[in-house]
Image 1 (cartoon, helix red, strand yellow):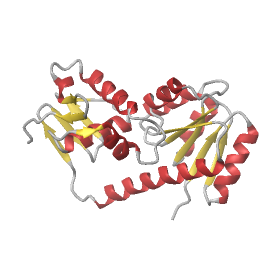
Image 2: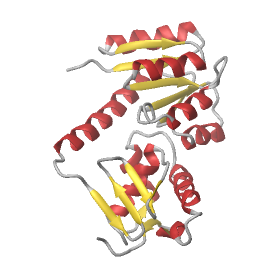
Image 3: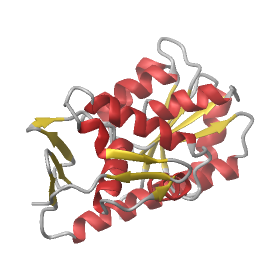
Length: 240
């Protein structure tokens, strides 16, 4: 089995060495980068299995790194754990909005960080194994919306939509059971995982982004309905 490769990005070399020591002790292969541009270059050339990314970086900050990687089809599926001395809730929400999968605040426990890495990689492996077991392409047509799981693609009126991995997972999950109401906590657990450190507002942010992307298609933003005081559901539409 191939050893998971992890890219650690921080301009403080002692932090990189601390994380590197603890990850290598668990059997992971570690790549280091010390500024934002180097992080993008390493992610694109080395294709790591996971990235631990500091927010405050020279040349390009971690948020911009995250944004660029999530817009690149070759790197958009790589899980990112943001690492920052900032504890402000708005910073966490911003990081999660642009595609980060988790957020750890400095000072941090190396054991907790390693545990989060393990949990994130387990979810990635589980997802991969599930796709391998699927022998038939899964293509769901719901009115004007097409969700193609094999291609990881969403079409509206035949036009391909640019969704982040989490937006795609959220839409696919809701559309999997049209008419059924899911609470924010349930969606948070199913899409982000029980170990996720964020709160239910993360779901609201991603729902809002999905609706904004549907706004140019008349009536499409209403496919995801808010059930006040409960959560969200996907509108029941004819399934082909």
